[in-house]
Length: 319
Image (tube, rainbow, N blue to C red; front, side, top):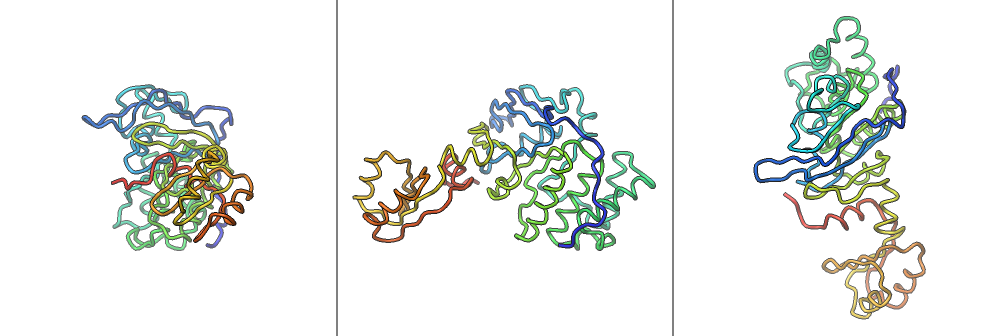
């Protein structure tokens, strides 16, 4: 992708030790369904904070409460030190939101979509034109500014939505599944832009289903399931804590290997025909298993955040 010319400038800076989002015993209920069940976490200025979880975990319900779209059922929620229940207008002025759904006006051009949205923040005239010009270059879509939004590719459309979320120069950027449905090239383009925003000091809160995305973008994250927080920490720390450095996988393990693993009290899972062995910091055990117990496929690979995610949330399908 062509690199942008004049880069988008972030003028406001916040202290790195300042708490941007403080959620305490946060709950969200829809009738009899508890979507968010007594969770607490903090997001600090300048960091990229991720919320991971399977479908129905409560990720989107959580961030919708943070940007004031959905009122909380119980708990305390402060953004920029302000109570969201009493100061949602002041908070909304300082945040940018990139939702899962495409809310662009399909009949308007790229530049018209941005002009209309800029008015919501009272950005008009020369200031609006300059801001839009900078953002179009930053997102590398200035060559399509007269195209209708509906005629853009999926990747360009997501970059346009992201540009729109940056119009008001937010202190907090909230992204709900920012690259869902994009091809690998488009996904990496969005990642590059988010990394540039991180370097400019913008605090980013995102949800994602892509473990590679979370590992690359998030300084710190939580994994949720069934409305609760299962773990919190830095991606690499969580990998080391729950899966170790390497993963050994064996297809069709025999009874001798199963007895050996149990006698060594090694962390492992048996799913169907695949035996997954966790927590090996070197390849000594792999060679012992390979030499003495592997009669079919046997491999070793680095552990990933996806291994942590599946180990904590399970492997069954979620609707």
